[in-house]
Picture 1 (cartoon, one colour):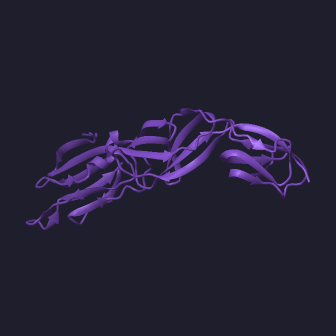
Picture 2 (tube, rainbow, N blue to C red):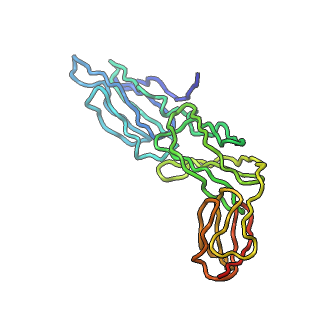
Picture 3 (cartoon, rainbow, N blue to C red):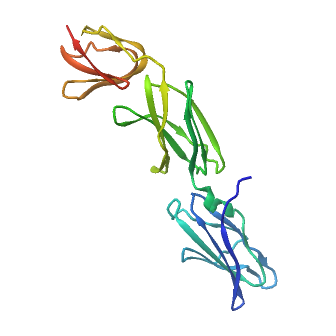
Length: 257
């Protein structure tokens, strides 16, 4: 069983009214309150709700939504509900602001066949970016939509490792803002380094020893071509000297007629 922590300070009486105080953190979901109707006085139980000192007024319905969308993700919250001493309202889904439900990467791993990870405390509409270190710069390998469950979520994708050491990380993004970047994790692949043919002078086509991504540069390090495959058509390149990045290696070739 997974536990959550929501601090609730139970009724404080003053002048015939009582208060309920609830604290937690905002994680993208609203709170819902049960607001009993008092038949004798023909009024609802709650006289006022405030969030972080901001008064929301008197709800006029028995099922009331506390809209928290104006707050920042993971912002601390204090909700104060003032109500009649003749009744007792309740927060229906207090667990959504539980403090132990903050997002976390539970585990990260890679093997010959896959890259996999487990998370906890996800929010709706989250996106994961899998990144790999390439020549001292993080490059995005792919993006995935999160499952959005507060409890654990498991992911596994097919690997397309480079030869030698692969350094990966994951970025969790919500509403266009980076929320959390994982620690780096590593996998040492037994694949041979990618080679190309012909090695010296190329006419129209470069053949690679296996499928991978590539970048072709001029001698001023301007990117001329990028892509992936096991064959590169360079017919349109003018005659001259060029660099080619294959995975982590920078190599050179000459374009002939």
